[in-house]
Length: 196
Image 1 (tube, rainbow, N blue to C red):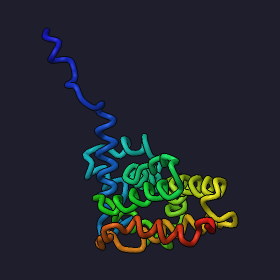
Image 2 (cartoon, one colour):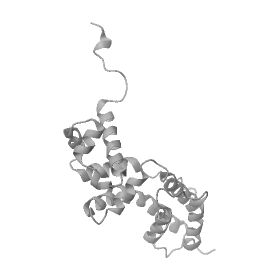
Image 3 (cartoon, rainbow, N blue to C red):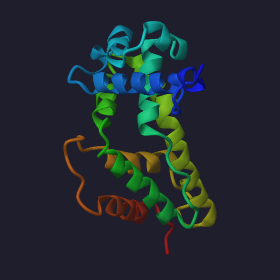
Image 4 (cartoon, helix red, strand yellow):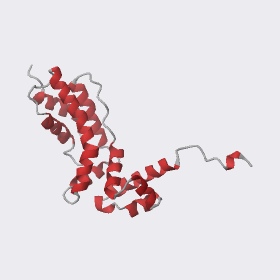
């Protein structure tokens, strides 16, 4: 018997393909106008072409599935180079601005907008997806205080909120003006930078 008939074709393992299909199906449903309400294990399984048990092997609940999909779509913030606080904040701000152009940016709005109806989902999203990203910014700001680039009395959490809030106030349909990330960082540094 010819070996080529029994060997699988090269490529990603089946489980990786299934996981990718599940994540994309979840995000597609989450991006719909009905948001979180559109997502169910049954709907994701049907859209991804997998069985419900395939989903449950990876994610124990709808909430875990949604948070996992959002984490995969958003990804981690790149570790800043450490050249200077301004350069590090620019790297982060440009990443935030670029994410707004991604296919699934509406998903995040739907989860945040549904926080009141789905508080446990939102709390888990904050903890598993948002907080690790805030930790990267926190590290940059703390280092800036230590190096004297930033005010010694800086409220780190307020600084994080000022940066992230200014980059997420517009809806996904609104385009950020050219150079917006740079403007945000420079205005922020005017307020939190160490006195010259």
